[in-house]
Structure formats: C-alpha cells, structure tokens
Image (cartoon, rainbow, N blue to C red; front, side, top):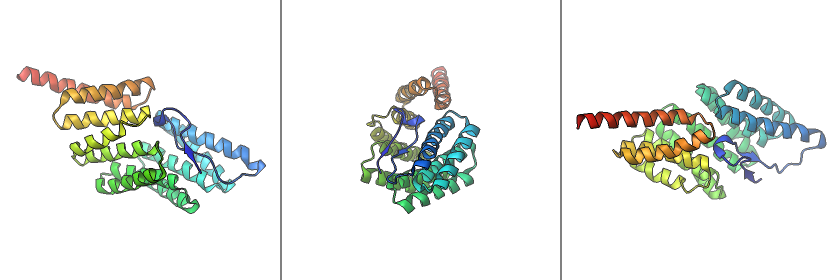
Amino acid sequence: PTYRRPQPLSITATPDIHHTQAPTAHTKHGLAAARSLTSLGHVEQRLGRIDQAAKHIGTAVTTFRQAGDREGEGFALYNLGRVEARRGDLDSATAYHRAALGAFREVGSQAGEAWALDGIGGVELRSGRIENAAVHFQAALALFRELGYQDGMPWALNRLGETALAGNRPAEALAVHVAALDSGDRGQQARAHKGLGLAHRALGDPDLAREHLTAALATYEEFGLPEADEVRIHLADLAAHSEAASEIG
C-alpha cells in the first residue's frame, strides 16, 4: 500500500492508508467512516479534546476489527495509543502501540510498523527511558528511509532530537533538528524550530534560542495548536533570564 497524510499540516494529521484489500460493497461505507473517525479523533487529540478523540477512535477500532481490516485497525490503535499518552495513561498507550505493531507486522505494513515503533518510543521517552526511546526512534527512521517516506523522516528526526535534549546532549539535538528543517512540512518545521531553540538555550546562545522559538510560535499560533502555550513559557523564561542578566551586569 501507499501512504499519505490527508491534510497539509501533518502536525494536525494522521497517517492515512490506501488498502490493498478490496472491501465488499456492504463494508465500504463502514470502512470509509472508520477512516474518517480515525483522522477526526487524531485532530481532536492534537487540539486537546481527549475524551472526544478516544470515543471516535475507539469506534473506528471496533469497525475495522469487525471488517477484518487489520491495517486500518493498526492505524486506529496507534492513534488511540497517542490519545492515552496525551491523557497520561502510559501503560494503556504502550498496550495500544504494541497491538498496532502486531497488526502491522501481521499484514506486512512497514510504514505502519514505523509509526507504531515511533509511538512506543514516545511512551519510553515520557517515562524517562531515554536510551530505549532512541532505539525505537532509530528503528522507525530506518524504515521511513528504506521506504522513502518523506513525511515520516522529519517526524522521526525531531523525535531523535527531543531524545538527545532529554539526555542532555544539545549539540547532537542541534544536528538532528537542523536535518528535520529540510522538510516541506510546516508542522515538523515548527517542531524542529522549537527543538533548535531549546538546544541553543542549553548551549548558552539565548539570541538564537529566541529566534527559533519565535519561528515555532508563529506556526503553532497560526493553526491554533496547544504547543503554542509551551513555547510562550520558554520565551517568557528566556526574557526573564535576559532581564536578570542585564540587572546583574
């Protein structure tokens, strides 16, 4: 199968799928609705509407499962894992991502496998298991590269940059986030700018940190995404430290 993201800003979109199997006439409508519910739930999750997201994606999982569509079920499970991670239920998130990984491997979906590995890595990173997270993100990146999947590569690169920052390796984070900036995807460009801002701050360059964080904020605000709040906090902290330094000087 081929893979695409259905919306121009991938940060509010979810991997979509074109199935190789041909559903029978009586299942086509249900599968189309399930795919729409998966994408809708993902967008709701990104906008912070967690309960609505869980409801819609949960319905999609059931529909895909009843239709025997394991690939569709895998993508719905992956998104449900992201919802639970956002909710803070990391055990459930891991279970959903591992179930998605099993579904993708069962049908030979390498792109799906990469996204499931990314999901597992995300939970590992949230849990403070930095090296385990890096292993999963590297595996996802390798699959994306093997497939030539241009949407997945910057996502995985940004994940690796965030992992490097969490491991107190800002110079490594810089190199990875710079590579992610080459993406034509504005969502991943914003994510890369945020990572670059935090890395430059850790390396003692507040001016470059402010430049990159401001670039990230502009995109997040344009699309009304919750990441804008976090970036504003970082910028306010930079301003406070700058003011304190000026007073000392």
